[in-house]
Length: 292
Image (tube, rainbow, N blue to C red; front, side, top):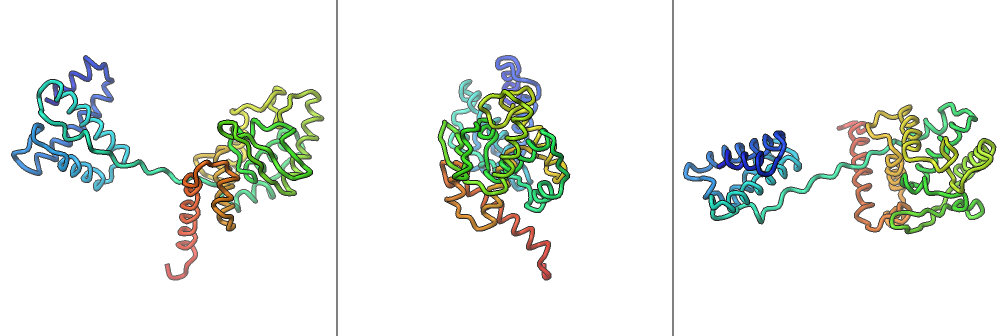
Protein backbone atom coordinates (compact mmCIF):
# COMPACT_ATOMS: atom_id res chain seq x y z
CA UNK A 1 0.00 0.00 0.00
CA UNK A 2 2.79 2.39 0.85
CA UNK A 3 4.59 1.69 -2.43
CA UNK A 4 1.42 2.29 -4.43
CA UNK A 5 0.88 5.56 -2.59
CA UNK A 6 4.45 6.70 -3.27
CA UNK A 7 4.04 5.94 -6.98
CA UNK A 8 0.84 7.99 -6.91
CA UNK A 9 2.73 10.94 -5.43
CA UNK A 10 5.52 10.64 -8.00
CA UNK A 11 3.64 10.00 -11.20
CA UNK A 12 0.13 11.39 -10.68
CA UNK A 13 0.78 14.27 -8.31
CA UNK A 14 4.29 15.08 -9.60
CA UNK A 15 5.60 15.60 -6.08
CA UNK A 16 9.33 16.13 -5.62
CA UNK A 17 11.54 13.28 -4.45
CA UNK A 18 12.17 15.21 -1.24
CA UNK A 19 8.45 15.29 -0.47
CA UNK A 20 8.03 11.63 -1.41
CA UNK A 21 10.91 10.66 0.88
CA UNK A 22 9.50 12.73 3.75
CA UNK A 23 6.09 11.09 3.40
CA UNK A 24 7.62 7.64 3.13
CA UNK A 25 9.66 8.15 6.31
CA UNK A 26 6.53 9.20 8.21
CA UNK A 27 4.47 6.27 6.94
CA UNK A 28 7.21 3.70 7.68
CA UNK A 29 7.64 5.20 11.13
CA UNK A 30 3.91 4.98 11.83
CA UNK A 31 3.79 1.38 10.59
CA UNK A 32 6.69 0.42 12.87
CA UNK A 33 4.85 2.06 15.77
CA UNK A 34 1.47 0.34 15.32
CA UNK A 35 3.02 -3.06 14.64
CA UNK A 36 4.74 -2.85 18.04
CA UNK A 37 1.43 -2.10 19.75
CA UNK A 38 -0.48 -5.18 18.60
CA UNK A 39 0.48 -7.93 16.15
CA UNK A 40 -3.00 -7.94 14.61
CA UNK A 41 -2.98 -4.25 13.73
CA UNK A 42 -2.77 -3.27 10.08
CA UNK A 43 -3.44 -0.24 7.90
CA UNK A 44 -7.08 -1.33 7.66
CA UNK A 45 -7.62 -1.61 11.41
CA UNK A 46 -5.68 1.23 13.06
CA UNK A 47 -7.89 3.80 14.76
CA UNK A 48 -7.62 7.39 15.96
CA UNK A 49 -6.22 6.35 19.34
CA UNK A 50 -3.30 4.63 17.63
CA UNK A 51 -2.63 7.74 15.58
CA UNK A 52 -2.71 9.93 18.69
CA UNK A 53 -0.39 7.52 20.49
CA UNK A 54 2.05 7.75 17.61
CA UNK A 55 1.95 11.54 17.71
CA UNK A 56 2.67 11.48 21.43
CA UNK A 57 5.62 9.14 20.85
CA UNK A 58 7.05 11.61 18.32
CA UNK A 59 6.78 14.47 20.79
CA UNK A 60 8.27 12.32 23.55
CA UNK A 61 11.35 11.71 21.46
CA UNK A 62 11.76 15.43 20.93
CA UNK A 63 10.19 16.07 17.51
CA UNK A 64 8.88 19.60 17.01
CA UNK A 65 5.22 20.42 16.43
CA UNK A 66 6.11 21.19 12.81
CA UNK A 67 7.62 17.71 12.33
CA UNK A 68 4.62 16.01 13.95
CA UNK A 69 2.23 17.97 11.73
CA UNK A 70 4.22 16.94 8.66
CA UNK A 71 3.84 13.30 9.71
CA UNK A 72 0.13 13.79 10.31
CA UNK A 73 -0.22 15.40 6.87
CA UNK A 74 1.45 12.33 5.33
CA UNK A 75 -1.04 10.02 7.08
CA UNK A 76 -3.98 12.19 6.08
CA UNK A 77 -2.97 12.18 2.41
CA UNK A 78 -2.27 8.44 2.51
CA UNK A 79 -5.67 7.53 3.97
CA UNK A 80 -7.52 9.74 1.50
CA UNK A 81 -5.69 7.91 -1.29
CA UNK A 82 -6.44 4.51 0.24
CA UNK A 83 -10.13 5.33 0.84
CA UNK A 84 -10.59 6.52 -2.75
CA UNK A 85 -9.21 3.22 -4.03
CA UNK A 86 -11.11 0.99 -1.63
CA UNK A 87 -7.98 -0.18 0.16
CA UNK A 88 -9.37 0.86 3.57
CA UNK A 89 -12.92 1.46 4.78
CA UNK A 90 -12.26 4.21 7.30
CA UNK A 91 -9.98 7.20 7.77
CA UNK A 92 -8.72 7.36 11.39
CA UNK A 93 -7.01 10.71 10.81
CA UNK A 94 -9.73 13.03 9.50
CA UNK A 95 -10.85 14.32 12.93
CA UNK A 96 -7.39 14.56 14.48
CA UNK A 97 -5.80 17.97 14.91
CA UNK A 98 -2.06 18.40 15.05
CA UNK A 99 -0.20 20.12 17.90
CA UNK A 100 -0.06 23.89 17.79
CA UNK A 101 3.26 25.31 16.75
CA UNK A 102 5.01 27.09 19.59
CA UNK A 103 5.52 30.69 18.65
CA UNK A 104 9.06 31.86 19.29
CA UNK A 105 9.38 34.65 21.83
CA UNK A 106 10.19 38.04 20.32
CA UNK A 107 13.89 38.87 20.34
CA UNK A 108 14.88 42.18 21.86
CA UNK A 109 17.97 44.24 22.51
CA UNK A 110 18.86 44.80 26.16
CA UNK A 111 18.54 48.28 27.58
CA UNK A 112 22.25 48.31 28.44
CA UNK A 113 23.09 47.51 24.81
CA UNK A 114 20.83 50.24 23.46
CA UNK A 115 22.39 52.71 25.91
CA UNK A 116 25.83 51.64 24.76
CA UNK A 117 24.91 52.22 21.14
CA UNK A 118 23.17 55.56 21.58
CA UNK A 119 25.26 57.09 24.34
CA UNK A 120 28.75 55.63 24.04
CA UNK A 121 29.20 54.86 20.36
CA UNK A 122 31.07 57.45 18.32
CA UNK A 123 28.56 59.18 16.06
CA UNK A 124 29.85 61.70 13.54
CA UNK A 125 27.90 64.70 12.28
CA UNK A 126 27.65 63.21 8.81
CA UNK A 127 24.19 62.93 7.30
CA UNK A 128 24.44 59.13 7.27
CA UNK A 129 25.27 58.92 10.99
CA UNK A 130 22.72 61.54 12.06
CA UNK A 131 19.98 59.77 10.10
CA UNK A 132 21.02 56.35 11.45
CA UNK A 133 20.98 57.50 15.08
CA UNK A 134 17.58 59.17 14.56
CA UNK A 135 16.16 55.99 13.07
CA UNK A 136 17.45 53.87 15.96
CA UNK A 137 16.01 56.27 18.54
CA UNK A 138 12.59 56.63 16.91
CA UNK A 139 12.18 52.88 16.46
CA UNK A 140 13.22 52.22 20.05
CA UNK A 141 11.32 55.09 21.67
CA UNK A 142 8.13 54.91 19.59
CA UNK A 143 7.93 51.19 18.74
CA UNK A 144 7.14 51.76 15.07
CA UNK A 145 6.79 49.09 12.43
CA UNK A 146 9.15 49.32 9.47
CA UNK A 147 6.37 50.47 7.12
CA UNK A 148 5.19 53.06 9.64
CA UNK A 149 8.60 54.69 9.85
CA UNK A 150 8.97 54.71 6.06
CA UNK A 151 5.52 56.29 5.73
CA UNK A 152 6.20 59.17 8.13
CA UNK A 153 5.97 62.65 6.63
CA UNK A 154 7.25 65.93 8.02
CA UNK A 155 3.70 67.00 8.86
CA UNK A 156 3.30 63.93 11.10
CA UNK A 157 5.80 65.33 13.61
CA UNK A 158 4.30 67.82 16.04
CA UNK A 159 7.07 69.41 18.09
CA UNK A 160 4.67 71.63 20.01
CA UNK A 161 2.57 68.72 21.28
CA UNK A 162 5.62 66.39 21.28
CA UNK A 163 3.83 63.63 19.40
CA UNK A 164 3.88 61.60 16.19
CA UNK A 165 0.89 60.77 14.01
CA UNK A 166 1.48 57.23 12.76
CA UNK A 167 -0.43 55.42 10.03
CA UNK A 168 -0.47 51.69 10.79
CA UNK A 169 -2.09 48.60 9.31
CA UNK A 170 -5.28 49.13 7.30
CA UNK A 171 -4.57 52.88 7.39
CA UNK A 172 -5.46 53.14 11.07
CA UNK A 173 -3.86 56.15 12.68
CA UNK A 174 -2.59 56.52 16.22
CA UNK A 175 -0.80 59.22 18.18
CA UNK A 176 2.48 58.43 19.93
CA UNK A 177 4.06 60.88 22.40
CA UNK A 178 7.81 61.39 22.40
CA UNK A 179 10.35 62.87 24.75
CA UNK A 180 13.08 65.49 24.73
CA UNK A 181 15.82 63.21 23.39
CA UNK A 182 13.88 62.22 20.30
CA UNK A 183 12.73 65.82 19.74
CA UNK A 184 16.30 67.11 19.75
CA UNK A 185 17.51 64.29 17.53
CA UNK A 186 14.68 64.82 15.02
CA UNK A 187 15.43 68.54 14.79
CA UNK A 188 19.11 67.79 14.23
CA UNK A 189 18.27 65.25 11.55
CA UNK A 190 15.79 67.53 9.72
CA UNK A 191 18.33 70.37 9.69
CA UNK A 192 21.02 68.03 8.36
CA UNK A 193 18.66 66.55 5.77
CA UNK A 194 17.47 69.93 4.49
CA UNK A 195 21.04 71.10 4.09
CA UNK A 196 22.00 67.97 2.15
CA UNK A 197 18.86 67.64 0.04
CA UNK A 198 17.61 71.08 -0.90
CA UNK A 199 14.67 69.53 -2.71
CA UNK A 200 13.03 66.45 -1.34
CA UNK A 201 9.63 64.84 -1.00
CA UNK A 202 7.27 65.21 1.95
CA UNK A 203 8.87 62.11 3.48
CA UNK A 204 10.51 62.52 6.87
CA UNK A 205 13.22 59.96 6.20
CA UNK A 206 14.93 60.41 2.87
CA UNK A 207 16.96 57.76 1.08
CA UNK A 208 20.23 58.03 -0.77
CA UNK A 209 18.47 58.97 -4.01
CA UNK A 210 16.44 61.77 -2.49
CA UNK A 211 13.09 60.00 -2.30
CA UNK A 212 11.45 58.20 0.60
CA UNK A 213 13.83 55.78 2.31
CA UNK A 214 13.47 52.22 1.00
CA UNK A 215 12.85 49.09 3.06
CA UNK A 216 16.26 47.67 2.15
CA UNK A 217 18.07 50.87 3.09
CA UNK A 218 16.23 51.07 6.40
CA UNK A 219 16.93 47.42 7.18
CA UNK A 220 20.62 47.81 6.32
CA UNK A 221 20.93 50.93 8.50
CA UNK A 222 19.45 49.17 11.53
CA UNK A 223 21.33 45.91 11.03
CA UNK A 224 24.71 47.58 10.61
CA UNK A 225 24.31 49.55 13.83
CA UNK A 226 22.78 46.79 15.96
CA UNK A 227 25.65 44.54 14.88
CA UNK A 228 27.95 46.77 16.90
CA UNK A 229 26.33 45.89 20.22
CA UNK A 230 24.41 42.61 20.00
CA UNK A 231 24.92 39.04 18.84
CA UNK A 232 21.23 38.45 18.10
CA UNK A 233 20.63 36.63 14.82
CA UNK A 234 17.82 39.02 14.00
CA UNK A 235 18.88 42.65 13.87
CA UNK A 236 15.93 44.16 12.05
CA UNK A 237 13.76 47.24 12.69
CA UNK A 238 11.15 44.90 14.19
CA UNK A 239 13.64 43.85 16.88
CA UNK A 240 13.68 47.47 18.05
CA UNK A 241 9.86 47.42 18.14
CA UNK A 242 10.09 44.32 20.35
CA UNK A 243 12.72 46.11 22.46
CA UNK A 244 10.42 49.11 22.92
CA UNK A 245 7.55 46.91 24.16
CA UNK A 246 9.79 44.89 26.47
CA UNK A 247 11.39 48.00 27.96
CA UNK A 248 7.98 49.59 28.57
CA UNK A 249 6.68 46.53 30.41
CA UNK A 250 9.91 46.14 32.38
CA UNK A 251 9.36 49.69 33.63
CA UNK A 252 5.80 48.97 34.79
CA UNK A 253 3.81 50.30 31.83
CA UNK A 254 0.29 48.87 31.70
CA UNK A 255 -0.44 46.22 29.10
CA UNK A 256 -3.37 48.20 27.68
CA UNK A 257 -1.16 51.28 27.26
CA UNK A 258 1.53 49.30 25.45
CA UNK A 259 -1.17 47.78 23.23
CA UNK A 260 -2.33 51.23 22.16
CA UNK A 261 1.20 52.50 21.56
CA UNK A 262 2.02 49.49 19.39
CA UNK A 263 -1.24 49.71 17.47
CA UNK A 264 -2.29 46.14 18.27
CA UNK A 265 -5.95 45.27 17.75
CA UNK A 266 -5.91 42.42 20.27
CA UNK A 267 -4.50 42.38 23.79
CA UNK A 268 -3.42 38.78 23.17
CA UNK A 269 -0.88 40.02 20.63
CA UNK A 270 0.63 42.35 23.21
CA UNK A 271 0.68 39.68 25.92
CA UNK A 272 3.49 37.81 24.15
CA UNK A 273 5.80 40.50 25.57
CA UNK A 274 4.83 39.59 29.12
CA UNK A 275 6.29 36.14 28.43
CA UNK A 276 9.44 37.82 27.15
CA UNK A 277 9.83 39.90 30.30
CA UNK A 278 9.21 36.82 32.46
CA UNK A 279 11.90 34.88 30.61
CA UNK A 280 14.26 37.79 31.18
CA UNK A 281 13.33 37.77 34.87
CA UNK A 282 14.14 34.05 35.11
CA UNK A 283 17.53 34.59 33.49
CA UNK A 284 18.34 37.42 35.89
CA UNK A 285 17.31 35.22 38.83
CA UNK A 286 19.53 32.34 37.73
CA UNK A 287 22.48 34.66 37.12
CA UNK A 288 22.25 36.60 40.39
CA UNK A 289 20.51 34.65 43.14
CA UNK A 290 23.14 33.39 45.61
CA UNK A 291 21.32 30.12 46.36
CA UNK A 292 20.48 29.16 42.77
